Image (cartoon, rainbow, N blue to C red; front, side, top):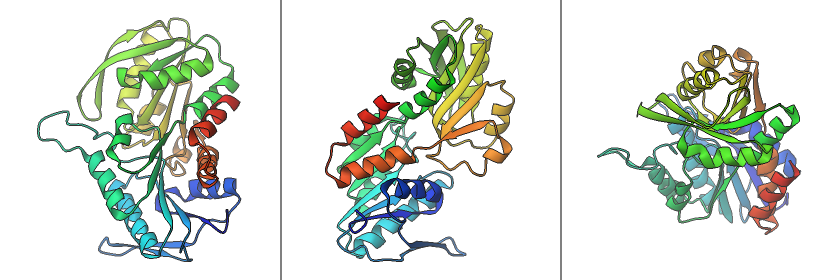
Length: 319
């Protein structure tokens, strides 16, 4: 694999890329990302990729547009250097929340991003826990959406919490919450809410019973934590004796950390699809789980021409 496969890390995902490379038993590829004073970006490859399978690891988190440009430029550099196959490993797919026209005259930006990645020369996209599964259909190249719920489920199984109920913060996350409930053999509850405008949510009602139970909220993204903290308060008001919150992508913008600290949470869990090194010192109670092993196994399956679905299924069963 070392002779045929190259893993490149861009700015936002160096730590995760190192974990993936270690899982595969190969060194991280050499590349240099430069940001000039006027904002221009240069991605220069430090080794030959001619005839090789290249995996570019980068989550398009904050700064979203800058990180996206790094990916596009890196793809172009690999294509012009005669790479055989170019796959983008984008654990957090930025702009995924703009997947439809919720109002007149709005863009469908996630479709635009899909087109840009294809036009730049990507042959495959590997991502995790897309905000909307239909985004896979925006691509005309293979797009693998890997679930991280088994990783979160494994963590909560080890805690061995009593009287657990899994809670979805909205109707859209019901399928994700049901997967976690099946792993934990726990009942499911759903918060019925409305969102008057972006990053603002108003919790309305609770479908299910949390009285006297330990509630585990699970979502794909926690951004400003407004939705999350409103839901936490509702669960305590409904009689929950403890509330844990979990997500795959901890965006944690603006007041998110302060809101989480003030929310009386029993624990907050996210993954490292987005690097949390800068936020952990200010919120040491946060537990960050690694998705590096599963992404490494997915890449290995692709390199060995094995079904990705079987690898992910085995990974979930083992946990």
